[in-house]
Figure (cartoon, helix red, strand yellow):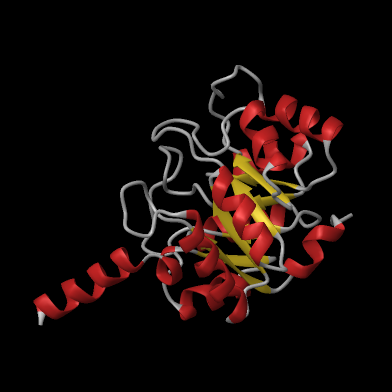
Length: 227
């Protein structure tokens, strides 16, 4: 049974509102403004990174906030430990997202153990950021409420595709008909977002192409210079 918190996401667009450390937009107030703008444009949920961002964004928007905490740059770094999960929940996330791969976690807990302990403390739905069919199946077995293709192409498990990994998305959707599957990762155009929805995605996450002007500017700059 789909968690009630996930119903508003069905068939909609989720916008990931993040900026990298050292960038001009790397400030909770800025990210909260970006999130509010995304909601005004039709986003059914937003994804926020970092405790201060999660707290402020949750205060500014009236849609579900998917919270993550990135700690580190290699290995498992998306909400990597139980302590990170607890902090994200305390910050006010409506949905907890965490690394859903089969790699070792920094605190020594398995994904299943982490989800079990979160479940004992909160009824907030859990989203697993996966990188393969195998990790998606394992995450579903662990009891997560929603699976995302977030890390496909960002680990050695699968090569990075040009655009979203629609093949993996379709495989997960077919294998997990009772679990909401979210398409996320390298969705840069409305056409790609539509293709992900047509491939069976419960919802589609777009981040960089909407909320990261540095990268978007680079795309246009490269196109102009090639001309």
